[in-house]
Image (cartoon, rainbow, N blue to C red; front, side, top):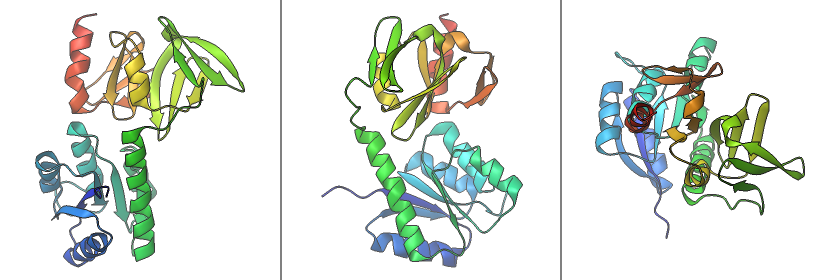
Length: 244
């Protein structure tokens, strides 16, 4: 039997947190713990990494849920599902910047919780196992890649690619002339590309080192696109830059 996913609950209302823990446990998920403060959640994620985090956006204390997710992602690429009763547009836009897998509105019902967590768990399994690319979907050569686009194979020189962004079971190859979507995981493409030219900087991004415009503390910029950097990949990125 496949082991169920491990979930960290970050919620400062203990009644809600206990209810979440009970319902998820009844669905055979493993609860790694319940944390009520952002700082404790960040530490918990480092010491006992879960497969996903159920995160209340409106945590009380120095770190709200959005900032807590951001701090977690500085060290680890752990999927986040936000719990929110807040319909404030500014908060929602801040939350979107952390690339959550889903939002669950409060008050939630058991079915919404079950379906949302199950969908995210399935996404994680698919990303781990990898989808089966369609025959001829991607072919990487020394200085170019052939991809299927509009029913035919087209050539892209690797030097044309600015960055590659994972989109669940697909990858988006961004160039100055447009974007191309292929059925392939980022992990698969990473294994084919020259790692002296392309480097992973985040769970969802690889970048062409020659195309970097800005390298900041927590992000990169390429052709005005802001790309997050995870701490787990930053050391590797800086080492590659020093060899250029």
